[in-house]
Length: 317
Length: 317
Image: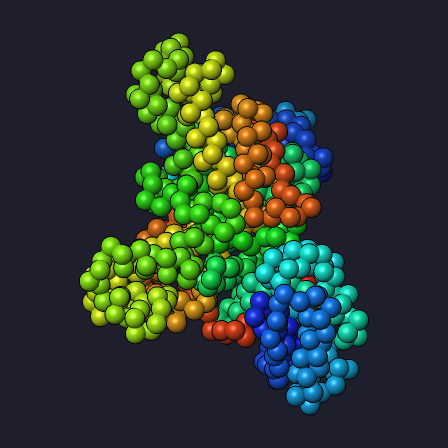
């Protein structure tokens, strides 16, 4: 049997047909073109889903379940209560998908949670049922899986680990709090830290690198560091320390089997992962435990979302 | 049927016979007199347990299960891997209890987790199965319950939320990290903050209050605040902000139904709870959710541990 996994993003809608081995059989996508009405967006979701089914050489009768990941908070009835970047408030996503696709088993979940599920079951997690996925992107997203199930909390808003404060009265976060992990460990934060260091170090290589690239990016400081630039080294060291701080917090609270780290910054690979592991190893509370949380790089990339959405049936029933 | 719940503490060993309604039928206790050998301590545990059974007018045949809470890390085989304040390393607690009591069903668990279970099932939680208990004592202890089960993590060291950093490079914590929640929100931290303010404010009422009490305690600043002392007000306001910071972190990550707060500082009652609730309300990520985490005061006091230990059978099987 096959499932449809949908990733409704701020930029693109991606739909994939996924088989029982969690492999993508076919995929289709279209721009989200947000802001638009939920009706228009769901018409497009249905259209690309059917397109993916046809690409797979199947018909909708072959589809056992449909899962969708979306930004924002999704309640137990499959209603998107709030998704600010789509302008959605109380959108009955499950019902709208059923009207358009006619499939009985429909599951809707937060996108970071879907990505966590995808990595836990079909990616680096290799079936692990105590798993945390952290995404270092524009923000810091996360999904927590305990005993094989997503930790949604009492109001389906759980898993917002990016909004745990690591610095009381620190940097302003978009959520309203000050000093959130996201305000120190996101790509956005790294870019801000890089720009600040560039002001302090007018002779840093980072100026040249940014000029060549046409902008300051999450890579600027890492590239400068690799060339021995002192300011670049300082930025990267501090940034990695902030990332590690939140990871160790998660280890101490949950001691998951695996924490997987995804998002653009992860392309730095072992340059990022090695010092992170060193920090976690030296600061975790569980110094005497024989078994320790593994810190690994996400491996499914953007596919984690659609695969995780397709798996929702497995964990939600 | 009845269960025995044991609370092995650094100071006292308490054993209670608990009935099916989670009520304590009889209780006995003896000093721990640590450091001593595990054999001696377990002989005393067995002795007070039998004493509690006799006080209840029962015999050991009436006991369905034995549960014990202990400081430190307890693995899945009921071995206390490490408990620094008892000087225990790899103590086979389950086996030692069986040898001494002859009851088949024996469960051993970290004491903070037992207290959380007690409050969740028999105290303020009223059966809630998504619950976090936080204890503001010498340290900051915590136990996390998700889906009715204790979150032990992969190595049984989970739930150490007191060792989540809220201030990068902040106050030194006993765990080795800097800036842990415990280093700001424990009674120990409050006393340190009070002493520091007393140095800064030589005319503060806190000096008189501490002199009368013979020492600076967790109550000193609260008492001064109630009498309008500026320095006392400042200490309490800052302390409550630190406590709230960690609570909001837990809300954002887990969105439990209830967070219950125990420990000596809780005797301040609504003086503490009201501003904590205000902070959580204004800073939590889930501002749009209809259902919100309740922040409540623990109600079982020291009994939470023995009752929770007696309940272990229910959640561990």
